Image (cartoon, rainbow over all chains, first blue to last red; front, side, top):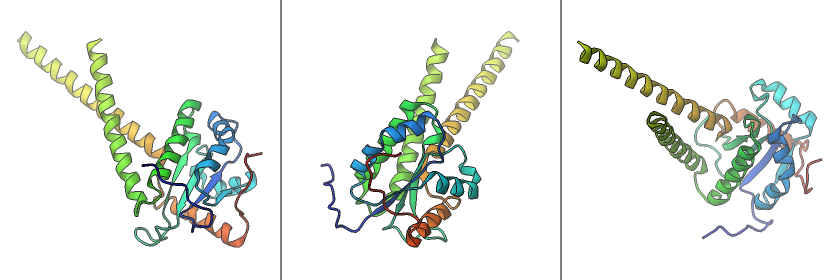
Length: 153
Length: 68
């Protein structure tokens, strides 16, 4: 059963951040053109869009992020404490890494779907780790299948 | 003798295939994590910086429907 949309008066579960330094890339275009869809599915949680200058300043301070933006970073407010010294938990989608617009759109849809489906989870990070592991396994099977096909061709 | 050579070649080919598949699996896993992952020790401080911006009022919730 799909989760019901929460009312705006509820305590937010997540803070959404969009970091976009302004690359003219396919993935950036996908994000800008489908921005309204993020608004539709973020369930009234606050969305913060960094200006180009703020994004550049943040990326300058963290140069490993160059070329990975636009980034959709989600901070999980319910997951304070626990692992790590900062106590900050969440997940991120680096759309800039994807060069193909279809891949970027699919990744964004998957990301939003995952958050919507797991927003009531007590440990969404663990859910993501499981999913990444599962995706890794699926990828491994796919590679083996492709290799077998190549050998048989 | 010829059988032994064929066995060795077959073995080498199988080993090369296994190594190539292992390499490809690793590459795809790495790529997947590069695109989509939880905040790790190297990226958690970014969430901290962003929350500081929210608390200081530098960042305000976006209410528009489109990005400029």
